[in-house]
Length: 320
Image 1 (cartoon, rainbow, N blue to C red):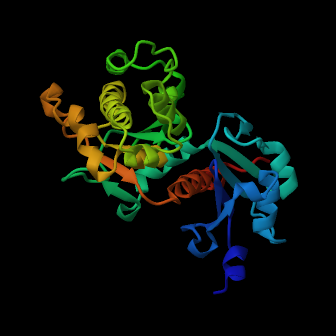
Image 2 (cartoon, rainbow, N blue to C red):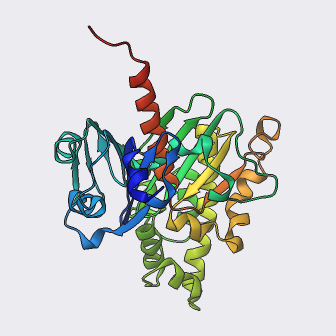
């Protein structure tokens, strides 16, 4: 069947709007239509609607649209954190001619994907890590900012948070205080655990670099100190998150900084505080951990939300 034929059978459109790129795809009743997935650079467009119009290229929009946004979402409104893009579900619905447009945070979309995420979309971070455990899982996103979403694996319910704006735990602050006299620039979680936060940490310690990779490659002992401080601090942060959310079904990490801090040469140090924790009969030490390695996982979460909505509407009694 041609792409045009597959799109004619689509029941939905999904989009994952990141800080740099947007991924879009059509959805049928079996999930994402694989060969309709496209990645578009945000910088080439003035708005999400411009980008979506380019992607659609005159093709009709299905009745249901779900959009994940890397930024705050409040009901029918959202804003992309590092680009001047606003989203209004009602306005987009009218522009698309769609019956329903749903906006969700990108971490919520990743959470929606966790119960059915395929093994080839993740990298286990330690031996014995298995997908599909019972209880609660936690998605931890580190990139432009920081946030988490908790997932009930039995019901698929996703609980959102604004963890990035919370204060750093005292255990993490204690590490910072050993290396700098003034910690006031790190008054929230994402002011340390984000791409910008890592560079801020390096600057405070005394070295200026323009990327995490540059920090890792630098021969300056202060660069090595900054990297060691961030790695040790993140390990303590992971342990704090485990106690806050008790994700027995797994920790799932996503984002550019997560990939950097959980690279093979650093991951053991990050996970050491959790692996060594014998609390509650060793349950915390046994929490499986994974790194998302596919860049289309959030599309799967949007699809799960879309199919659930379509199913709920199909089951709803008709009104006279």
